[in-house]
Image (cartoon, rainbow, N blue to C red; front, side):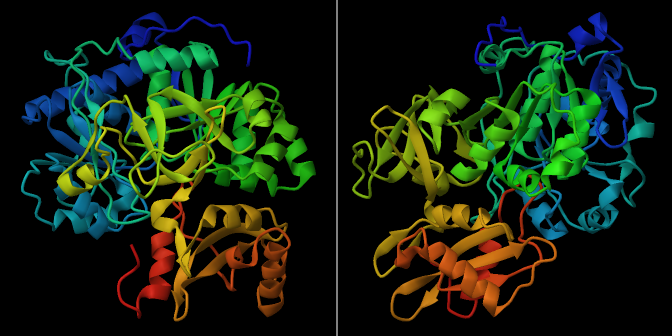
Amino acid sequence: MSDHTGAAQTPFFPDRFAAERPDRAAVIMAASGEILTYRELDEISNRIANLFRMRSIMRGDHVALLMPNSALFFGVAWACQRSGLYFTPINTRFTAKESAYIIRDCGAKALIVSADFRQKGEELARETFPALILRLSVHGEIRNFEPLESMIEELPEVPVDDQSEGSAMIYSSGTTGRPKGIKRPLPESGSGRSDLFLQKLSQLYDWGEETVYLCPAPTYHGAGLWYTMAMHRIGAMAVVMEKFTPEGFLGAVEKYAVTDTQVVPTMFVRLLKLPKGQRAAYDLSSLKTVIHAAAPCPVDVKERMIEWLGPIIYEYYAATEANGYTFITPGEWLAHKGSVGRPMIGDVHIVGPDGDECAPGRTGMIYFGGHTPFSYHNDRDKTEEARHPKGWTTVGDIGYVDEDGYLYLTDRKAFTIISGGVNIYPQEIEDLLIAHPDVLDAAVFGVPDAEYGEQVKAVVQLVDGTRAGGEMEAGLIAYCRESLATHKCPRSVDFLDELPRDENGKLYKLELRRRYWSDNGELPR
């Protein structure tokens, strides 16, 4: 893909492709094989948009969705996108109480809940939401909700009179605290035909109408949502996994001749833990581009993925806040292993504790300048905390740049362990543990220490069939001491059957840390 020279595609709402290639699949669900064509996507999104207008949900209003990965999800998302609405897909891991917080905080006027989450829906129906005027169920009935599918059967299949661009308002995952909505002004253009960022990516990856994109991520996540909807703007085919499994991913690539996909490092790890023979059983020759992001990727893991799939693995670093974007090709990465690239949007500034910019090689807070402004919904203090006096913004990540301007991620500020006054970055330790053949997943964080303030704790998920216990704990600590300074190594290791991650690989480290700090006052920082 390094020689891609494809022309940029002009993005559209799905109506163009509904007219030009109506029977082309816009969405295929990977496991069930359910297909939503461009004609159907256009028709159902228009009908839902008309329902919104009938119920006085107008441009700038907000819709909250609690839905699994499904074809209908995109009908709803496009209805919001083409009728000028903000829409928030809620993390399906969240409890009814956590979901209620988001519905209330975003001021949703409409709530759409899948019958897959009937119990949560019924609990939410008993809550009071001052702005809510419409509750809709999909995929089945929920008490005190109106059934969307039957309500739209007779509604017009044409766009609403005031069709205009809406925007997803994604909430942070809550991995370091309470989720916050990232809100931007609605696009001013009314036609959906001016997404310069998508045009730039189409050039980078040679995307076009013949692209077959595999989404293994949850669609409540910003990347899973944005990239899949981007495929609909250029007339490509999106294959959507109901839920990621390593075998399901490989099978989908082979079955649907997938050309492009986006994953997270946790998925790489799970793929590499499969036996080589099992991996080799699938034909992956159609793949030309594998994109990864969302978390730092251990160098060893990426090296092994390139060895397996070839130099087709591209990486970017960005955040839901969209305050900057770095990019790195496979060739660049092999020359700058561990880097997430150089800026493609915005400019990078590494800032030390004194607020001054750091020299290359020095670790500090990562800021971006020259970006699109954002704010945290209903949280002016958090918005201001993210801003530097020079106008740069940060999402709380720590890293450094090398002499060539390549950015490297170290960790999140909230996860930094301070032991005896020394900063320890857990990501380095987690990357090492995950490379151990018996470890499937690992989390490292600080726990209380009477002498040093904090000490390093590891919590590990072992490969199936591996025995936990004192011998394994001692072996993992010794393994870390072979590669790391003693002060960085875990003082103890606990074992869990599964670490608390969402479906897109985000680790809920705060959930783990609370278990160790709950009897010792508030969590640090």
